[in-house]
Image (cartoon, rainbow, N blue to C red; front, side, top):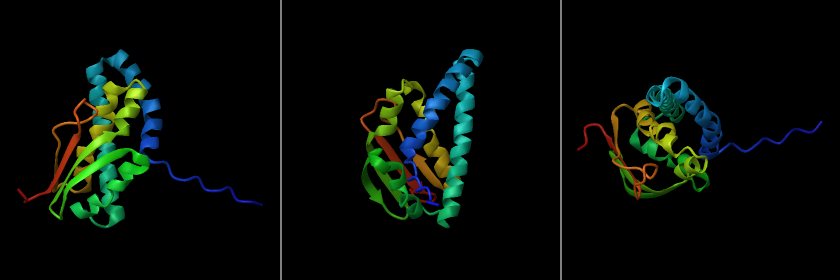
Amino acid sequence: MSSIPEEPPLTLLQQREIEARVVGPLVRGFAEELGAEKALEVVRRVIAGLAREGGSDLAARLGDASLGAFASCLGRWSEGGALEIDVLESTGERLSFNVTRCKYAEMYRALGLADLGSSLSCLRDFALIEGFNPEIELTRTQTLMEGASHCDFRFRAEGEK
């Protein structure tokens, strides 16, 4: 009896596309019934909760909730060319980078979900780091998803100015 070859794991971009193809129409349906504001409020709360749990799980899997450990995982979000990142600073206390191309944003636009992309994707970043280590602060003032020239991610371990 031959064994079935194991499928390679999905990239995060592929996973998000599968989710978006299901969640996008659901959000649209709930928005028709409940109103867009209420539907998006629920979506954002649920997505943030999932991301917070994901951050906590990531820290547990790594056995390390330091900013350096988090930085070592940037490749997961960039798999398959999903993100083009310019790292500006990476120390134990600070991680600063700009995302200059985001295939997540491109994918949401291609699916006709550009207006939901921020709620389904970008929102995750703040909750993820909170779950990973609440003493790491993320500041971001703009995103490609919202039409900016780049996303500006600035992480700082608490106590650093």
